[in-house]
Length: 364
DNA sequence: TAAACGTGGTA
DNA sequence: TTACCAAGTTT
Image (cartoon, rainbow, N blue to C red; front, side):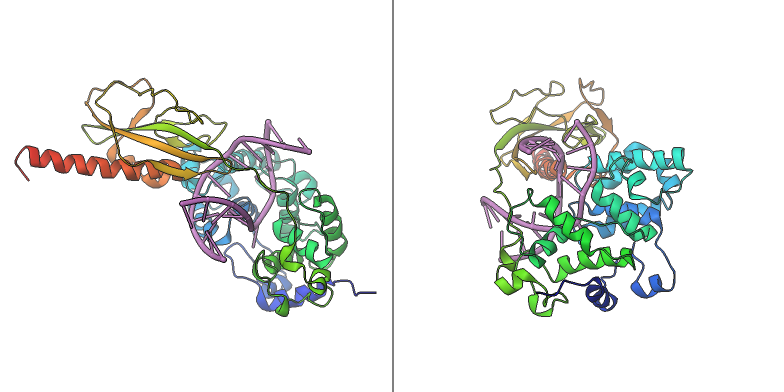
């Protein structure tokens, strides 16, 4: 009979190797009774959904500097929050972040509920995030099951059923290991273990605090687990993007619809994105010049290639779509990455055009 | 249940 | 360059 893995083994490891994160309370401080700010835990957990710690750090810093409490965030303007989230991806998270903040203020007086069940009723908070907040912020014995935990459990118990079928089984295994003592640190310990030791490729089994009871290590199958169903190939979609610059330097942009891809974000007017060449529907008649290079970007489920057209627009231009953003109010960092790539190409196009104009007029 | 939904890092 | 991967949720 093989020994069962013990939570105390990785709690001891976590005491020595916990990763330092701005939203975290160290194991030592936690033992002294300190708890993290539920707002910081919630904000960081939403940002961390399908996202790396490295990518989140800067965003977390800027959000908490600008909106220190959930009440501050609830009072923010939608466009400001979307702009601050730009570049982090999965923009439904930002829209739900605002909805959640406003619900916490309206229904809970600005204090997050402390049970996973109530947390899971809030916008943008699913089973994982509800358990994470309950455990980390309130030290409730909730079981977090993220990609790390799935991988660690699959290896510990040599589960060969592929995901997502194995999800229920892996969840039950994780629940059986969750301790009553230090559940918050335990949740973070398993995730740190998955992120630094029990990694997807080349796991460091030799230094793993759970190497003794790990069944996949014994079987030599750890690097092959968890198994996953094959993914579908990504189709290529194409489209046109129009970057118009008014004579006073203002840019023609539009706010995308709240639902769907890049919902609620700023973008350039353009065509549909489809697998066949779509119609060119320019936002207003102008001398649109197509650039030689396409903007390429890969989303979760398709590759995108955008032909970029640029034009100088008169000061009295009346576009059918979008609105002009004054030169000094426009920040490329407010755009989602796909749109920022379009702008980078357009900027080069305008620069070449400007240089050409200077030569033409003999003032170069 | 399956598909939609971003991005940057890495092999 | 391509494909996979990362602290998931919503519809």
